Amino acid sequence: MNLDLSEWSLVKNVFSKAQKANMHVNIASVSIEGIPNITPIGTVFLNDDGTGFLFDSFSKLLAENLQTNNNICISAVNSSKLFWLSSFIQGQFSSYPGVRLYGELGDLRPATQEEKLKVNRRIQSLKWTKGSKLIWSDFTNVREFKIKSYRWISYPNMMDHLT
Image (cartoon, rainbow, N blue to C red; front, side):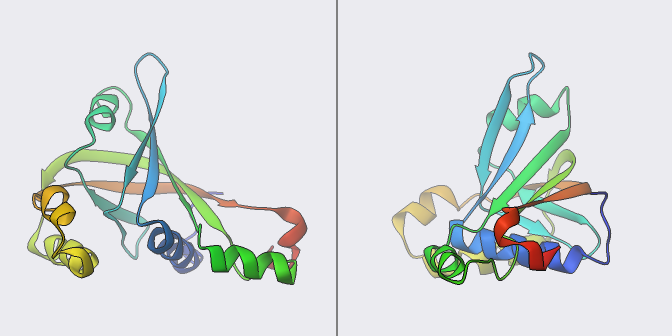
């Protein structure tokens, strides 16, 4: 589906639940040789206007692929066991289990103060851990993206009421 901003709040809600359950989303890109690559990134943020940004510190292959093709697909699937168990018991999903966002990823640029505050709020609960200090201590650069279209993750027999 082409991006319809009237549905964007629903897209953001499904995306947020998936990212919270998984602590990341997956970003697909394609190399110059046509080889796909999936990059898990936990610091993806959606804005209210069909755009967003992500902190890019470790994604070497994503950066390489963007040199020749800046098209991406961001996949966010809610893997919460409670969400899935409840859905199976009820025989239907209460909301979409996930969404794929299709768009273009921009060049690396320095993060704004507001963007740094957003990521610090997200990682706050784990900031005291050794792993957090090793992985999340250098959030300085972001890439912006613009979403052009999206596609719901769907299981039709359990989603008729959502369409």
